[in-house]
Amino acid sequence: MKTSGMQTILLLTILSYLSEAQPTDRCTSMGAHACAGPQVRGQVLPLARAHTPVHARAATLLQTQERGSTNINLTDLIYKIYYINLDGSTDRRASMEGTLSELSPMIGVTHERFAGVYGKLDSWCIQKAEGRTQVLGNLGCFRSHLSVWEKALAEEPTQPWIMVMEDDAFIPDARKFAHMRELLEYVPSDADIVLLGPKQKPEMSPIVAQGVINKQAIWVVSAPGLPSFSAYLVKISSINKIVPALYGQLNISAADYNPCIMHVDCASSQPSIRKYALIPGIVSLEHDLAHVSARDAVND
Image 1 (cartoon, rainbow, N blue to C red):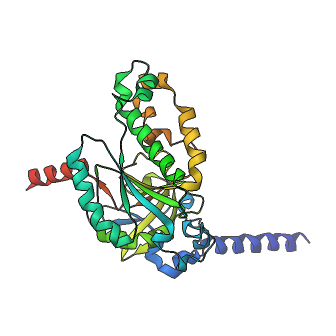
Image 2 (spheres, rainbow, N blue to C red):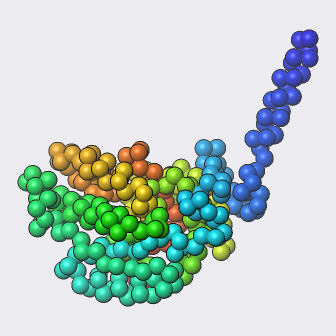
């Protein structure tokens, strides 16, 4: 009996090891390269055990309307593209209008300008700052994002998401949006916010899904503290949950040592908000590109 018991334990151990060693269905269907980790200096690093994709395609963002994902396109998903722009930033407005006039017809989603809140002149920001003028800009940005969400919610759209962009967002190649629907196949269905332009590398955040689209390796990462609100999607049904949570956690005294806490980037890091990011992002920032151009000029 003892020998039989030991053999049984050994057999179960071997079977457990073999089952854990098998590739996931996603990896098998997409090829071994889809399960490789991030590339560092030309080498492909194997993903850590915690980074193994855990979300199957049957539970992704595209299923939020209880329809088969193959029957859903971007016009079914996204109600409108809003871009936040201060009244005085006329050059940025012209740039965004030029960019979105090309993008909107490409993906079939209309765009609209939203007048940003100028913190130094806004009564709510001034009152909330309690004399801390250094946070007025952050509060204005915070107020702008939450206000555009509330505006979209009040319009009672039938689509489940809106896209929001800041006016320093830059789309280096609008053709990348042709694959946006495929990218959203990998985003978990519990998402409240999906960041479209993060700068972090995939190894810096927990990976929840990965694959290859148009010969490009892509990752979806869990991003509770990822500061990248240049362009993102927000779920309309989550707005009533997110807005009170963000207003409620504002702590003006914390701004004395961390002004970022007054910004929507940091405020949205609370665990109750399910935030994911696409890596690599499909949107950049103007100042990022300027930095790259200056660097390249020096190197040349």
